[in-house]
Length: 522
Image 1 (cartoon, rainbow, N blue to C red):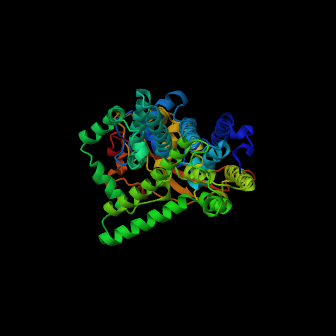
Image 2 (tube, rainbow, N blue to C red; image 1 turned 60 degrees about the vertical axis):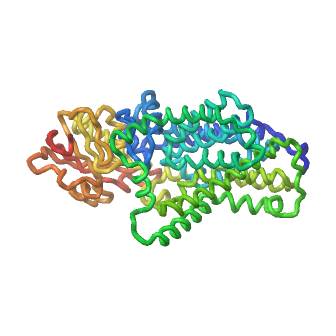
Image 3 (cartoon, one colour; image 1 turned 180 degrees about the horizontal axis):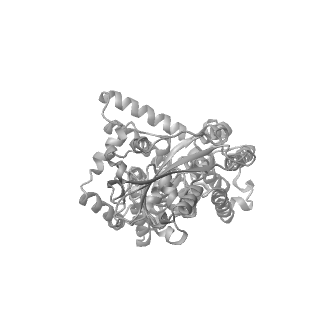
């Protein structure tokens, strides 16, 4: 397909790509914020963490997401809007940096745009991202920025490019521990290629490294000063304990990695292979390496090499560590370049214009289907339509308002929530209270009043405080004695639904006002 016959409509040009991506993300942002103020998976405990600005919060996750969220909440408060603005801003950065990389590796601007749009065809991005992604959003933005800035360093060899790379690497190191795969793969890919090896300037990489280390040092200081076992703790989580022989763990880990890679790539990979199979594997004519620009070909080859190296590093990492806790949601840094590499290969061969049209239409349909599913889940949050939990629609806001109405002193009290969903969401309606969950206890002073709140279940199910303490991970010794419990109460909240009657589903919460000197309140 000759390059000059490709349609260059507005949506394929840089301005159109930016408008389309920003519009898509803004639509999902407004949709979620309008329909529900409830914090969902991951957001809820982060809302409790950022009551305070700390050098570190948990060993398994570096703290840059919390640092950013702390700043955003100074503007939007501890509400759903702070999470949405932060997440979609980071995803926008991810998409734009990746588009900048795609334009350097794919000469055809329509295919470069499709490579970036293709992320909506990854379940973890097109669907799962819209509920519960926190640190992964920073990881995505930092990873794409790293690739872009690394190419900038290789191409222009300027101090400004080195600073850009250092900032990107520092941000990535503070996002998730798995981020290290991205700079490692890019550097090894350049080092293993004769042309790109000649473009490496060690002094510039030293500048980048110094900046990255300086950015990472506060968290590293927290790990060392608090005597946290960073590597050991991470390995323990990834290994899921020490059960089984070494060989058994390695085989299990490698199989889980393979299935996670395939699962993460769906439905993108089977879809693009089906529609572009002749261009990828057929006998179509391969374009000359010198047309239209040898530099474009070299960048595409570098990205392809980096993708293969990241896969090799992932499999080697499992081999050496015996890691078994491997999920699809962990594959972002491994498969970051997959759509770019595939469309780079497509751009080098003749391909059918009809395939591009069909693929573009399928992407549009996927976007509409996801929007439809999300809207229907907001309007009809029953177990058939949005899963058994529908946590993003649970009426925690009503719980907070009733708690304030019945106990006005709760607005300034210590609130101990026996599960993280309740704790994070109560901070939305009780922003001035001091909130405690099992995984976080603020260092601020005790308050004169203390309340324990727990989810007793739906549909008349009653779960006592002792049971909630145990399932929430609290030590049974922290349960207040009868003499410490000043008052007990229950609050019923009704779930919303477009056509079902009120109380079609309701959740009961237990409330206990206890002596503020109780151990659990400190």
